[in-house]
Length: 302
Image (cartoon, rainbow, N blue to C red; front, side, top):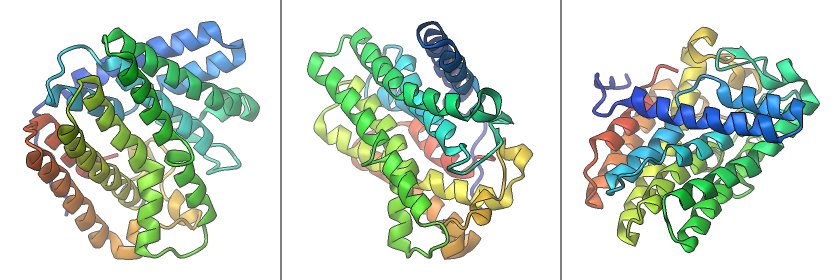
Protein backbone atom coordinates (compact mmCIF):
# COMPACT_ATOMS: atom_id res chain seq x y z
CA UNK A 1 0.00 0.00 0.00
CA UNK A 2 1.20 3.49 -0.82
CA UNK A 3 1.19 5.75 2.21
CA UNK A 4 -1.53 8.38 2.18
CA UNK A 5 -0.57 12.00 1.68
CA UNK A 6 -1.32 14.11 4.71
CA UNK A 7 -4.20 16.52 4.26
CA UNK A 8 -4.22 19.44 4.27
CA UNK A 9 -0.85 19.96 2.64
CA UNK A 10 1.80 21.82 4.64
CA UNK A 11 1.97 24.18 1.69
CA UNK A 12 -0.89 25.74 -0.22
CA UNK A 13 -0.48 23.47 -3.22
CA UNK A 14 -3.53 24.90 -4.97
CA UNK A 15 -2.28 28.45 -4.52
CA UNK A 16 1.14 27.69 -5.99
CA UNK A 17 -0.32 25.60 -8.78
CA UNK A 18 -2.69 28.42 -9.68
CA UNK A 19 0.14 30.95 -9.75
CA UNK A 20 2.15 28.76 -12.11
CA UNK A 21 -1.01 28.21 -14.16
CA UNK A 22 -1.53 31.95 -14.55
CA UNK A 23 2.06 32.42 -15.68
CA UNK A 24 1.60 29.56 -18.14
CA UNK A 25 -1.59 31.14 -19.48
CA UNK A 26 0.28 34.40 -20.03
CA UNK A 27 2.97 32.49 -21.91
CA UNK A 28 0.29 30.85 -24.06
CA UNK A 29 -1.31 34.22 -24.83
CA UNK A 30 2.12 35.55 -25.86
CA UNK A 31 2.62 32.58 -28.19
CA UNK A 32 -0.82 33.11 -29.69
CA UNK A 33 0.08 36.72 -30.52
CA UNK A 34 3.60 36.11 -31.83
CA UNK A 35 3.50 32.82 -33.72
CA UNK A 36 1.85 31.88 -36.99
CA UNK A 37 -1.87 31.84 -36.10
CA UNK A 38 -2.50 28.10 -36.39
CA UNK A 39 0.65 27.20 -34.50
CA UNK A 40 0.04 29.88 -31.87
CA UNK A 41 -3.49 28.61 -31.25
CA UNK A 42 -2.18 25.06 -30.86
CA UNK A 43 0.52 26.19 -28.41
CA UNK A 44 -2.03 28.08 -26.36
CA UNK A 45 -4.29 25.01 -26.31
CA UNK A 46 -1.39 22.81 -25.20
CA UNK A 47 -0.42 25.15 -22.37
CA UNK A 48 -3.99 25.64 -21.12
CA UNK A 49 -4.77 22.01 -20.29
CA UNK A 50 -5.52 21.17 -16.67
CA UNK A 51 -2.58 19.60 -14.88
CA UNK A 52 -0.90 19.05 -11.54
CA UNK A 53 1.82 21.64 -12.38
CA UNK A 54 4.09 19.62 -10.08
CA UNK A 55 7.27 20.59 -11.91
CA UNK A 56 6.44 24.28 -11.64
CA UNK A 57 5.47 23.97 -7.99
CA UNK A 58 8.76 22.16 -7.31
CA UNK A 59 10.62 25.20 -8.68
CA UNK A 60 8.73 27.42 -6.24
CA UNK A 61 9.13 25.09 -3.26
CA UNK A 62 12.86 24.57 -3.81
CA UNK A 63 13.38 28.31 -4.21
CA UNK A 64 11.62 29.05 -0.95
CA UNK A 65 13.29 26.18 0.89
CA UNK A 66 16.71 27.77 0.39
CA UNK A 67 15.72 31.34 1.17
CA UNK A 68 14.15 32.75 -1.99
CA UNK A 69 11.44 35.34 -1.42
CA UNK A 70 10.41 36.65 -4.85
CA UNK A 71 7.75 35.35 -7.22
CA UNK A 72 9.27 32.57 -9.35
CA UNK A 73 6.03 31.30 -10.89
CA UNK A 74 7.22 32.46 -14.35
CA UNK A 75 10.27 30.21 -14.04
CA UNK A 76 8.00 27.38 -12.99
CA UNK A 77 5.88 28.05 -16.07
CA UNK A 78 8.95 27.70 -18.31
CA UNK A 79 9.51 24.18 -16.96
CA UNK A 80 5.83 23.36 -17.42
CA UNK A 81 6.02 24.55 -21.03
CA UNK A 82 8.75 22.01 -21.72
CA UNK A 83 6.64 19.31 -20.09
CA UNK A 84 3.60 20.33 -22.14
CA UNK A 85 5.68 20.17 -25.33
CA UNK A 86 6.70 16.61 -24.48
CA UNK A 87 3.05 15.62 -24.08
CA UNK A 88 2.10 17.12 -27.45
CA UNK A 89 4.73 15.07 -29.26
CA UNK A 90 4.24 11.98 -27.08
CA UNK A 91 0.58 11.84 -28.14
CA UNK A 92 1.31 12.04 -31.90
CA UNK A 93 0.40 9.03 -34.08
CA UNK A 94 4.09 8.26 -34.67
CA UNK A 95 4.65 8.07 -30.90
CA UNK A 96 1.99 6.81 -28.46
CA UNK A 97 -0.94 7.77 -30.72
CA UNK A 98 -3.34 8.94 -28.02
CA UNK A 99 -6.65 10.77 -28.33
CA UNK A 100 -7.05 12.05 -24.76
CA UNK A 101 -4.76 14.11 -22.57
CA UNK A 102 -5.65 15.89 -19.35
CA UNK A 103 -9.30 14.96 -19.83
CA UNK A 104 -9.75 16.49 -23.30
CA UNK A 105 -8.78 15.78 -26.93
CA UNK A 106 -5.06 15.81 -27.62
CA UNK A 107 -3.55 18.71 -29.54
CA UNK A 108 -3.24 16.83 -32.84
CA UNK A 109 -6.89 15.74 -32.63
CA UNK A 110 -7.97 19.38 -32.39
CA UNK A 111 -5.38 21.15 -34.56
CA UNK A 112 -4.07 18.41 -36.84
CA UNK A 113 -0.87 16.38 -36.79
CA UNK A 114 1.31 18.82 -38.74
CA UNK A 115 0.28 21.81 -36.67
CA UNK A 116 0.70 19.87 -33.42
CA UNK A 117 4.21 18.80 -34.44
CA UNK A 118 5.13 22.40 -35.30
CA UNK A 119 3.59 23.67 -32.06
CA UNK A 120 5.67 21.25 -30.02
CA UNK A 121 8.84 22.43 -31.71
CA UNK A 122 7.90 26.06 -31.12
CA UNK A 123 7.39 25.42 -27.40
CA UNK A 124 11.07 24.61 -26.82
CA UNK A 125 12.51 28.06 -27.68
CA UNK A 126 9.43 29.60 -26.08
CA UNK A 127 10.33 27.86 -22.81
CA UNK A 128 14.00 28.85 -23.09
CA UNK A 129 13.06 32.49 -23.63
CA UNK A 130 10.60 32.36 -20.73
CA UNK A 131 13.28 30.94 -18.43
CA UNK A 132 15.76 33.63 -19.47
CA UNK A 133 13.19 36.38 -18.97
CA UNK A 134 12.20 35.02 -15.55
CA UNK A 135 15.84 34.80 -14.43
CA UNK A 136 16.50 38.35 -15.60
CA UNK A 137 13.41 39.65 -13.80
CA UNK A 138 14.74 38.15 -10.57
CA UNK A 139 17.86 40.30 -10.89
CA UNK A 140 20.21 37.33 -11.21
CA UNK A 141 23.61 37.91 -12.75
CA UNK A 142 24.21 36.93 -16.35
CA UNK A 143 26.12 33.79 -15.44
CA UNK A 144 23.24 32.44 -13.37
CA UNK A 145 20.74 33.42 -16.05
CA UNK A 146 22.73 31.39 -18.58
CA UNK A 147 23.02 28.45 -16.20
CA UNK A 148 19.27 28.38 -15.66
CA UNK A 149 18.63 28.15 -19.40
CA UNK A 150 21.39 25.56 -19.81
CA UNK A 151 20.01 23.32 -17.06
CA UNK A 152 16.49 23.48 -18.48
CA UNK A 153 17.57 22.74 -22.04
CA UNK A 154 19.98 19.99 -21.05
CA UNK A 155 17.23 18.23 -19.11
CA UNK A 156 14.93 18.60 -22.10
CA UNK A 157 17.20 17.29 -24.83
CA UNK A 158 18.98 14.15 -25.97
CA UNK A 159 20.81 13.83 -22.66
CA UNK A 160 17.54 14.02 -20.75
CA UNK A 161 13.86 13.83 -21.58
CA UNK A 162 14.10 13.36 -25.36
CA UNK A 163 16.85 10.77 -25.00
CA UNK A 164 14.71 8.88 -22.51
CA UNK A 165 11.69 8.97 -24.79
CA UNK A 166 13.78 7.55 -27.64
CA UNK A 167 15.12 4.75 -25.43
CA UNK A 168 11.56 4.04 -24.29
CA UNK A 169 10.35 3.70 -27.88
CA UNK A 170 13.30 1.54 -28.89
CA UNK A 171 12.65 -0.81 -25.97
CA UNK A 172 8.99 -1.50 -26.83
CA UNK A 173 8.50 -5.25 -27.15
CA UNK A 174 11.92 -5.94 -25.61
CA UNK A 175 12.74 -6.90 -22.02
CA UNK A 176 14.98 -4.51 -20.11
CA UNK A 177 16.77 -5.41 -16.92
CA UNK A 178 16.33 -3.26 -13.81
CA UNK A 179 19.33 -1.05 -14.65
CA UNK A 180 18.13 -0.43 -18.20
CA UNK A 181 14.62 0.38 -17.03
CA UNK A 182 15.90 2.83 -14.43
CA UNK A 183 18.04 4.58 -17.02
CA UNK A 184 14.99 5.12 -19.27
CA UNK A 185 12.87 6.41 -16.40
CA UNK A 186 15.55 8.74 -15.01
CA UNK A 187 15.94 10.36 -18.42
CA UNK A 188 12.37 10.30 -19.74
CA UNK A 189 10.72 11.77 -16.65
CA UNK A 190 13.29 12.21 -13.92
CA UNK A 191 15.57 14.63 -15.75
CA UNK A 192 13.03 17.44 -16.04
CA UNK A 193 11.71 16.97 -12.50
CA UNK A 194 15.25 17.04 -11.16
CA UNK A 195 15.97 20.16 -13.21
CA UNK A 196 12.91 21.89 -11.75
CA UNK A 197 14.32 21.46 -8.25
CA UNK A 198 17.77 22.62 -9.28
CA UNK A 199 16.32 25.69 -11.00
CA UNK A 200 14.68 26.74 -7.75
CA UNK A 201 18.04 26.54 -6.02
CA UNK A 202 19.82 28.44 -8.78
CA UNK A 203 17.20 31.20 -8.70
CA UNK A 204 17.91 31.64 -4.99
CA UNK A 205 21.69 31.66 -5.51
CA UNK A 206 22.04 28.59 -3.29
CA UNK A 207 25.62 27.47 -2.46
CA UNK A 208 27.13 24.32 -3.96
CA UNK A 209 26.47 22.11 -0.93
CA UNK A 210 22.80 23.09 -0.92
CA UNK A 211 22.54 22.53 -4.66
CA UNK A 212 23.94 19.02 -4.18
CA UNK A 213 21.24 18.24 -1.61
CA UNK A 214 18.54 19.58 -3.92
CA UNK A 215 19.93 17.50 -6.78
CA UNK A 216 19.78 14.34 -4.66
CA UNK A 217 16.20 15.12 -3.71
CA UNK A 218 15.16 15.94 -7.28
CA UNK A 219 16.74 12.81 -8.76
CA UNK A 220 14.91 10.59 -6.28
CA UNK A 221 11.56 12.33 -6.71
CA UNK A 222 11.85 12.20 -10.50
CA UNK A 223 12.28 8.42 -10.54
CA UNK A 224 9.59 7.93 -7.88
CA UNK A 225 7.14 9.97 -9.95
CA UNK A 226 7.64 7.79 -13.04
CA UNK A 227 7.30 4.58 -11.04
CA UNK A 228 4.02 5.91 -9.64
CA UNK A 229 2.92 6.65 -13.22
CA UNK A 230 3.68 3.03 -14.14
CA UNK A 231 1.49 1.83 -11.28
CA UNK A 232 -1.34 4.23 -12.08
CA UNK A 233 -1.41 3.10 -15.71
CA UNK A 234 -2.48 -0.30 -14.39
CA UNK A 235 -4.58 0.61 -11.36
CA UNK A 236 -6.40 3.82 -12.37
CA UNK A 237 -9.12 4.44 -14.94
CA UNK A 238 -9.02 6.70 -17.99
CA UNK A 239 -11.37 9.16 -16.30
CA UNK A 240 -9.16 9.28 -13.21
CA UNK A 241 -5.97 9.75 -15.21
CA UNK A 242 -7.33 12.16 -17.83
CA UNK A 243 -5.51 10.05 -20.43
CA UNK A 244 -5.93 6.54 -21.78
CA UNK A 245 -5.24 3.94 -19.10
CA UNK A 246 -3.46 0.70 -19.94
CA UNK A 247 -1.33 2.19 -22.71
CA UNK A 248 1.94 0.80 -21.31
CA UNK A 249 0.78 -2.80 -21.62
CA UNK A 250 -0.82 -2.15 -25.02
CA UNK A 251 2.48 -0.79 -26.38
CA UNK A 252 4.64 -3.46 -24.79
CA UNK A 253 6.50 -0.92 -22.67
CA UNK A 254 8.93 -1.83 -19.93
CA UNK A 255 7.58 -0.65 -16.57
CA UNK A 256 8.39 -1.16 -12.92
CA UNK A 257 5.30 -3.34 -12.32
CA UNK A 258 6.29 -5.53 -15.28
CA UNK A 259 9.74 -6.07 -13.76
CA UNK A 260 9.07 -5.97 -10.00
CA UNK A 261 5.29 -6.46 -9.72
CA UNK A 262 2.85 -3.90 -8.34
CA UNK A 263 3.90 -4.32 -4.72
CA UNK A 264 7.58 -4.16 -5.60
CA UNK A 265 7.05 -1.03 -7.70
CA UNK A 266 5.10 0.67 -4.92
CA UNK A 267 7.76 -0.22 -2.38
CA UNK A 268 10.50 1.19 -4.61
CA UNK A 269 8.60 4.46 -5.08
CA UNK A 270 8.08 4.86 -1.33
CA UNK A 271 11.75 4.12 -0.66
CA UNK A 272 12.75 6.79 -3.17
CA UNK A 273 10.48 9.36 -1.51
CA UNK A 274 12.15 8.52 1.80
CA UNK A 275 15.57 8.89 0.17
CA UNK A 276 14.57 12.28 -1.25
CA UNK A 277 13.61 13.57 2.19
CA UNK A 278 16.80 12.14 3.72
CA UNK A 279 18.85 14.00 1.09
CA UNK A 280 17.28 17.28 2.14
CA UNK A 281 17.96 16.73 5.82
CA UNK A 282 21.52 15.60 5.17
CA UNK A 283 22.06 18.89 3.34
CA UNK A 284 20.57 20.92 6.17
CA UNK A 285 17.39 21.82 4.28
CA UNK A 286 14.29 21.82 6.44
CA UNK A 287 11.27 22.02 4.14
CA UNK A 288 7.87 20.57 4.94
CA UNK A 289 6.82 21.71 1.47
CA UNK A 290 9.42 19.69 -0.39
CA UNK A 291 8.86 16.66 1.84
CA UNK A 292 5.13 16.85 1.14
CA UNK A 293 5.77 17.00 -2.61
CA UNK A 294 8.01 13.92 -2.44
CA UNK A 295 5.16 11.99 -0.77
CA UNK A 296 2.62 13.44 -3.17
CA UNK A 297 4.63 12.29 -6.19
CA UNK A 298 4.13 8.71 -4.97
CA UNK A 299 0.64 8.81 -3.47
CA UNK A 300 -1.16 11.05 -5.99
CA UNK A 301 -4.39 9.64 -7.43
CA UNK A 302 -3.62 10.53 -11.06
